[in-house]
Amino acid sequence: MRDPNFWQDPDEFKPEREKVLKFLPFGSGRRVCPGANLGYIFVETGVGMMVQCFDWRINGDKTVNMEETAARLSLTMAHPLICTLLPRTDPLSLKLKIPS
Image 1: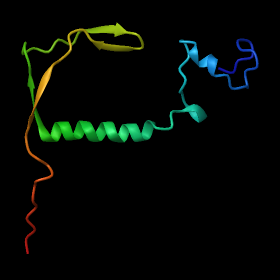
Image 2: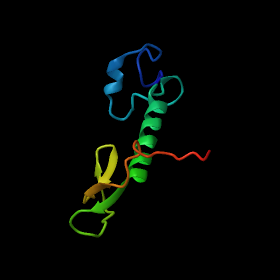
Image 3: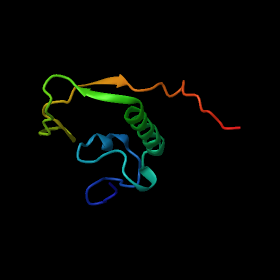
Image 4: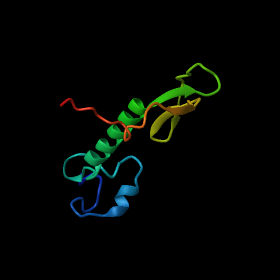
């Protein structure tokens, strides 16, 4: 986004340039999102807890339809999967027995 053939004053920060939809505000290098690493940690922890602590039951039709549809910048499922989570264990109530 600093091409002088395309932008007037390419080295100056002008937030209105970010409103152009063909450019994303965060990319790589010095303009990378500062919270990306923390976000990855929370997402991985959340998914790990859901896999470890819950059984998954599919509601309604028991088949999974993997058709996709375009929605702005990402793909979404054409027929969303609706599940019920059934607690498997309470990870905070587990007591470890340490041999003496």
